[in-house]
Image (cartoon, rainbow over all chains, first blue to last red):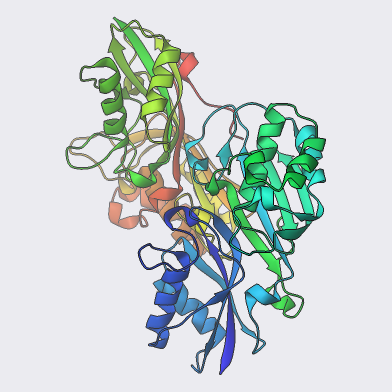
Length: 256
Length: 256
């Protein structure tokens, strides 16, 4: 048996998220179907991270075991020939036999894109949140700085029962590129809806020109009701993960 | 009666082109429906140019007459509230009473975008043609230069019966921006499928490293069979038109 890791990019607009569901079209489901047709038996993928409906990925990692003689290059070509064009296999690589993307990932990088132009642009609908008022980048940077570090992020998440709400955010950085405002955020892992809730919250604080200390108050309240709304899914991109035990599949550079 | 001109941007991915059809969803049809709901009577738009299925527009111009007391700002807001997000009214302006976008337009500007990166990118599917081999920009510039001027473009068009095949191309310019190769082309007017046939042809000539003089031979053959294939619609954008009699609605700048 060999372990094969796939690096996957997808436009999430037309999918009910990554994770397989019985009654909806998901990215995982579509890839597993294609793999099943190639290998002529059912395949289950392990993966680096779930993404919600409408969320995109530049470098999701999926992994499966096989006794097929196909090369990794053949896997990539065969999959890309079967998959819809909004899901692309960027690479297929032989992986260590026990490789599991979710458990091996030590860091995840997500990007959130806001179109901060005056005009609505029909081409950005699915790919960015439109905020018309000119954003105060200094204020946003301040709020984001307060989120760094090791915290209980209960206020910013849809927690699953019994889930540990502590995470460590390593980077939470706002940059302005022309009329786009971009949030880059990395953490050991994220809670469900955490990034979109962070975005919704810092936008509300910015609108009210609130003090950056309010972030600390929201964090320590450990109450989802204290944070802002969950921001639009189409602005969110899973950029990549870092696998110290399998650096070949790490993507933590090249997007700046 | 007032004449109102609309500046319209749309993502053509989900539409059977601009022009109204009885059995397909078109951009014109959707806007006329929305206007009809606002004005409570049927409205017919005149417009600057037809675009085919999948072709996009940054600045299409549509025009109608009305005796409504609504202001142009109210028209824009009311339309944008009713229209799907992949069609946006950028501006509504009071126009000269005899304004007709098609007859008044003296120049049209289209842009064709090629993604010339090594990897397929799922986000560019609907918005650019993917050409994987590194394109020779010098060769492409040469072919495009030969297309300038006043010619019979029969070889590059789907002509309608009895249509005059002469057009004047003022600009036909290739530029490379990172891994995108972009063609900007302006003419007094274009024939049906003319730009996409030009793109398909120059790409085939580039692939064969043919001499630029072949463009002249194809032009003088006046035979559609001599030119290349019609390139992918999703790479084409109607950027704007120039109306000397109504400069307010002209868009011939600001995209470089």
